[in-house]
Every structure is written in structure tokens, then in C-alpha cells.
Image (cartoon, rainbow, N blue to C red; front, side, top):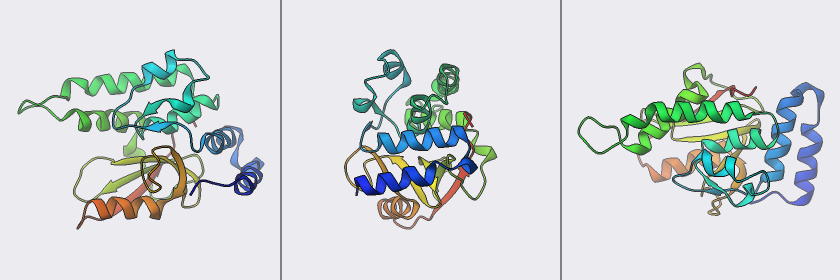
Length: 199
């Protein structure tokens, strides 16, 4: 369920502590502000929302792995150069996409571009506030979902699940892992954290 007013106020109080650092604090506060906004879609790109201006983000559609970058961009922490770098990573995998026997499906190529941008090879077991949280399932070689660590096992996630509303949701790792397992019977889900490029 979405955070109510008191819950949001309590989150803001917890986040505004010197120990988190200015950049992490800015990003987490923006994530709370944006909860219930954005629009998850199975496909979405950067160009529309960077050209569209600063006031249109609440209705913009994007994929899960763009959400942490976009939140950081709206918080003033990720710069335009970060968006350009993401585009470069995505474009580098574009030739892989297609339907021929030597081609990787477009969806998988897009995931690979996100993995390059977030440097998933540097991921670790635990996540700290501000980290990007990577979800894996045992029968797939790539990251299947991206979220942002808010605190402990709480994350900000852009997906239709677990609340069936296709907006930015603050939920738990267990909520998301449970959905992934139910949708993929017989698989196990693992989670890792990575420090994003803007931190």
C-alpha cells in the first residue's frame, strides 16, 4: 500500500540524518516525493523525458532500470552526462537485438545495456540506502528487476507489482521476490546491491 502522510513524514525525519550524506539524502527524499508517480512500461526510453522538461515526469512511462537514474536526475544528483552515458551503454547493445539466429532478443539486449551502465559486476551482497538493488532468478543469466534501496529491506521500485498500480512503489525485497517466484515456479530469487554511478 502507498505510504500515508504520517509514514512519509517519519521517513523524511529518518532520512534527514548527516550519516547518509547529502547526495543519498537528496535521492531518497526525491523517491519519497515521487512515490505513486511515474508509469511502469515494458518499454521506455530516456529521450522523451529529457526533452520533455522538468515538470512532466509524473506521467512518463519507463522501464524499471531507468527509475533509479531518473529519480537521481530529478533530485539534481545525476547530471545530463549520466543520461548520455546510459544512452551510450544502451546503444552499444542495440546491434545485438533482433530475431535472427545470431541475435539476442531486444528485451535481453536492453537488460544488458542496463547492466553495463550500473556496473553489476561490482555488485555485493548487502545494500545500503541509495544503492541500486538487483534481483536475479536462478534460470536467467541477467538482472530481471532493478529497485533503489531506501532502508534495510525497503526499496523504491517501478513495476506493476506488488500493488498492481504500475507506479513507483515503496515496498520490501520480500514482496518483490515473492512475486518473481510465483511468476516463475521452481526458480529461486537472489538479491545484490550496487553503488550507482551518481554516488
